[in-house]
Each structure stands twice: as structure tokens, then as C-alpha cells.
Length: 241
Image (cartoon, rainbow, N blue to C red):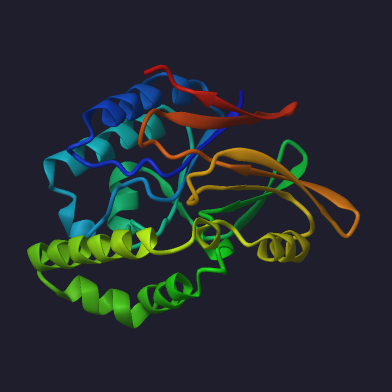
């Protein structure tokens, strides 16, 4: 059975078509998988595990729990939109939280999994914010605030981020080739799978004489797409609308 990879679904209650695609994917394609890996930004944003009672969030959690309960190991990596997903969410949904990056062996080949934002080192403003926002102090202070206040603050940050992105050259929001090569070298020249950039493609990098395959996962803003990997390699599959 293949192993499946998805990222950047940005689920929220208002995106009805993508939500249907996701729930259908969990009930069909994912049920026949050896494992499912979600590499960040499952949600448009996550304000804290005390929001598990939200009706939409509860529906997503229940769907993931059904998949995990059916015997398909399900793994989740934090993205830049949902990095405060915590242990309560993991217990309720049956997923296993992954560190970013995670190096594993799959079908006899080394595989490096990342969300992908740490590869975008040309965007120094974003990297500075990421370092601050991922600190224990920043997260602790955020989660101390009332849920409604938290959500309002996150919405304000999202609006600010969208405004800033419109003013940035597109190339600085993509991965930096030198950082990709350094990452592949540091981890022993694995196959790399990541999301974040919303620029789905297969790339081949030559690093110190080693050919390294890099797959960029698609976002789910228009339609669902996943990467399926087995002994023969990987291929991207687009879900039917």
C-alpha cells in the first residue's frame, strides 16, 4: 500500500468544497494507505486546543479519529498557520505530532519531511517573526489570552501578513536554493517532501554529486491534491472536484 502526503489544506468552516474533498479523501483514498502524513497548515489557523469544541473543528477531529481508528497511522506536522496544535488535539484526533524536520526511512530510501517555511530564508522578515512566534514565551503568552481575544489577534496578524506579501517580490517567498542544498547535505542527501510555498512541482537537485529529488506539495485552495509514494517512487494525484 502507498504512503500519502498532503499539506496546506487551510481548512475552515467557510470553504465548503475543499472541506468535502478532505472528508471524502479521508474516507476513500486515505483508507487504503499505509500511512498519511499531513505536513502543516491543516487549518487556516488554530487558536489553541481549547477550541476543540468548535463544531467545525470537532468535525475535522472526528474524521481524523475515524481514519486513525481504521488502522491507518496518521502523522501531523505543524505549519505556519497551526503551530499551536497541541497534545489535546493529537489525543482527540488520533494523530501523531511530528517535529519539523523529520527524517525517516521509507521503502528503503531516506526521506526528509518539512513544512517548508524554514527553507524560505530570503524572506528575512518572515524568518525573524517565525523565530519569535515559535518561542515558548510567545506561545505561552498567546495561549493565556481568552480564546475570542486570541482569534481576533490571529485574524489581525493574517491580514497584516497578506498585506506584506503583496508588497514582496514573489521570489523571496519561495525556497532559497542554497538553503535547500544545505538541508539536503546536512541530512545525508535524502528525498525531500515539503509544502508551504503553494508551488507544486518535482525538482531534482545535484548536491555534492548526489541526485536528490524534492517534491513540493500543492495547496488545497482550488482542489485537493496529494502525493502518493511506494517502492516505485512518488507521483502527484489531483482529486476530482
